[in-house]
Image (cartoon, rainbow, N blue to C red):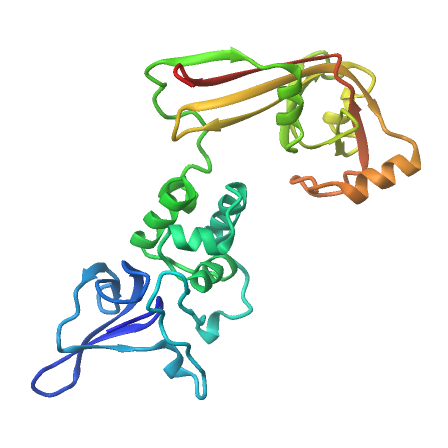
Length: 306
């Protein structure tokens, strides 16, 4: 017996041949598609580990589509099985879990093939999860989290509204200063940073912004009447960091320098054209502000033996 993710396992009555129970195969434990399987039962929606007996058979997903072809399951680990998405899901937008899986996979620098191999699943099924709304089983999420070096809670977005750093500190942490070149390298990853400054009313403020690095300058765009735009013409601090909750490690980089509005039309055009992201806050944000650091420092927390 061999199956693909998404196939249906049907258990029949040995006396009448009628289906007694059925469920979707949502997890494979062997790359060649042989048992056991993780099955989400249609009558309870629970997922259990199943070793099919003689009264069980596989209903392949493509049987529902006339004329659909199915490649045979592989006999080696070098060939990947084929998963065909249900017709109702094709062309839909990706779900939140799929987006998080895709982002984490690309962050780790993994191809679909390598990530699927690590998670012991079909490359096509992983692509389906990333591209379509889906509700993968807990077993599937556990394998994906392990393959991507993250947690099930992170893939589900459970910690989205919690500040980072909720875990325990390292037993023997080491806090070390970063050289300017390493600070520049970390800054050049782009993303979200924080601008610290004095607002027009004299109060200190910290504003998160999507930023870029262009010719050693930190640039971000905002609305002309926003608090962030008030940074222009003043000396500001800009901070960016990364926290690895699972390993209780992280780094931070602090840049200090004067901020100014980018007003030259050609420079504005190039910044807009080559920006990696648009401002998450949305709306009309076409005022570019540039920070040229005069001071660049950073720190990193690692285990003492690293």
